[in-house]
Image 1 (tube, helix red, strand yellow):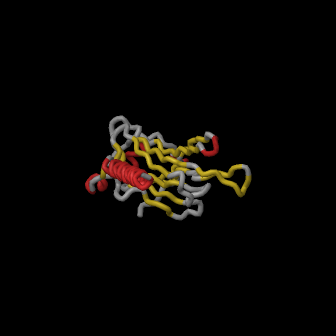
Image 2 (cartoon, rainbow, N blue to C red; image 1 turned 135 degrees about the vertical axis):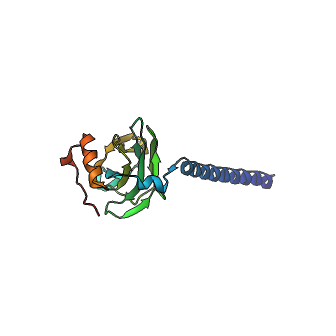
Image 3 (cartoon, rainbow, N blue to C red; image 1 turned 90 degrees about the vertical axis):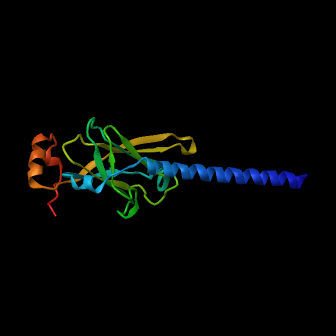
Length: 201
């Protein structure tokens, strides 16, 4: 009788294991299939590119300098333009020392008007540290509203509820042609003194 019970228990454990594996795989596949892969033709028509820095706190100091509390983090990229799409060319995750940990995009994608995409740093990820960050590179083919790019950190460990948002900051921008730069700036309301303009390569 004991052997029979053990067999049923073992079958139950195996069923749960493979069920969880299947759900996990489907989630990853669904995430990839929902992304809009940008065509080479679309990328060649981009006239403006911008690099954005988004702080991430995969852990924070708690109680003392030697004790840290791990956090999960989510990068949110929102296209707030109602009529035009934007192109996301890179989403790279760096640790506190500035070392690349993960490139989240295998290929450039686009976001349709008012579309949002999210990227998660797992609670168990311990490489980022207190000074981790995302670098997001995006572009457009004509003047659009700038996307909202921010990170959200959260933890419910040890019966404590912690959550906060960290805004991003423009690192650099680049205009691919001089004439397009002049036309863009004439229509844009961006303060030029807050942006570090890159020289044309």
